[in-house]
Image 1 (cartoon, rainbow, N blue to C red):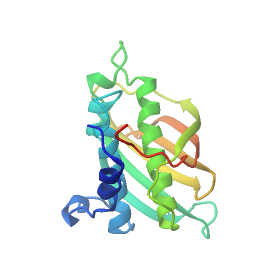
Image 2 (image 1 turned 60 degrees about the vertical axis):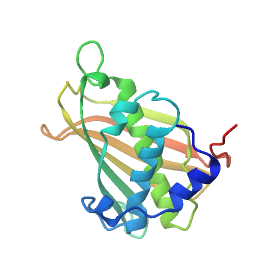
Image 3 (image 1 turned 90 degrees about the vertical axis):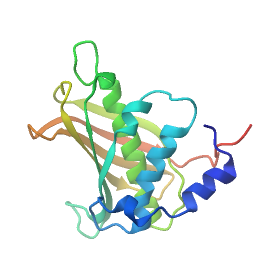
Length: 194
C-alpha cells in the first residue's frame, strides 16, 4: 500500500483510540505512546511486504518513557521497550536468530526512540535516516526465544542523533546483541504518489 503525502500526514496527526496504548507502560504522554504504534504500522504497510515485514508485525510495544539518564540525572532520554518471539522466518540455517534480523529490529526501534525524544522536545513527527550502526553480537538466540528490545536515546534534536539499543533473552536474562546507532535528520521527503 502506497500512502499519499496527505494520507501519511493525516494518519500521523490523528489520535488513536486510548485503548491502543492501554497496555503500554511508562510515563510518556498518550501522544508519545502512539508514536511507536503508528511508525511500526507505517513500516509494515509501505510497499508489498518487504524485508522483515512479517516479523515486524509481531513486535509488541511494552513501554515508552521519558526519564533521566543514569549517568546524568539532569539529562533526559526516551526509552522504548518492545518484545517479540524468535520465529522461523527470523532465523538462519542453524535455527538461530539471524544477525541481519537483529540489526533490523534495533534499527527500527532506535529510530523510533529518537523520534519520541525529538517530539518530546518539540520536534516534528519525522523519522531519522540511519547513518551507522556499531553492532556487538554477544550470544545466540535460538528459535522460540522471547526477546526484549530496549532502545534509549543518547542525543536528540540535532542534525545527527545517537541511540543505544540492546536485545535481551527474557528467560535467560542474557544480552544477545548491543548497538550504538547514529542517525541524521530526514531530508524532508515524504511518501508520494509519484
